[in-house]
Image (cartoon, rainbow, N blue to C red; front, top):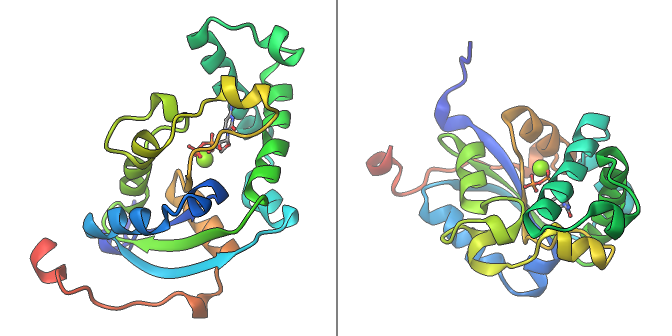
Length: 198
Ligand code: CDP
Ligand code: MG
C-alpha cells in the first residue's frame, strides 16, 4: 500500500548531450513547468563514464530489454539484426547498446534535474514520449524534436539520440535521485499556482 502523499512523488530527468547542444534545455524545462510539475534540483555537469555506468542498471534483464528494443526496430524496418550487427541475441545487442550509451552520455555536458508533483514519474515519461523518436507521438519532446531510431543509430555504432532520460518507475527514480543529488541540493518551495491547480 502506498502511503506517500501523491503530491510528493519525485522523478529524475537528464537532458542528454544532444538536447543541451541543440539548445533545448529551456524548452524542456518549460514543458515540465507548464504541466504544473515543480523543479526542485537542477545542475549542468559533464558526467564521467563511471557515473553513467552506475546510473544505468547492470541487470541482465534490463540489458536484454535494450537489445530487444533494437530488434523490434529492425523488425519495423524489415531489417535483419544478424546482417546489421552480426548477432540476433538481444543480450549481446543490449551489451553493445549499453556501451554506446556510455559514450553518448559522456560526449558533452548534461543537465540533470529532480522534478516533483502528482504522478511525476508517469507524467514526465508522457512528456518525454517513447524511447525511439521515430515512434514517439507528436506533442512529446522526443516526438517534436527528434527523428532517430535504433536501426539508424546501430549502423553508426552509437546510442539513439533521443534528447532526454526520464526515470521509468518510482523505484528507479529513488535510486537515480539518490545517485545524482545530495539531499542538501534538493529544495522545496511553493509554486504560485499550487492552490489553484491541485
Ligand atoms: O530512455 P528510455 O527509458 O526511454 O529507454 P531505455 O530502454 O531505458 O534505454 C535507455 C537509452 O538507451 C535510451 O533512451 C536510448 O538512448 C538508448 N537505447 C538505444 O540507443 N538503443 C536501444 N535499442 C535501446 C535504448
Ligand atoms: Mg529507461
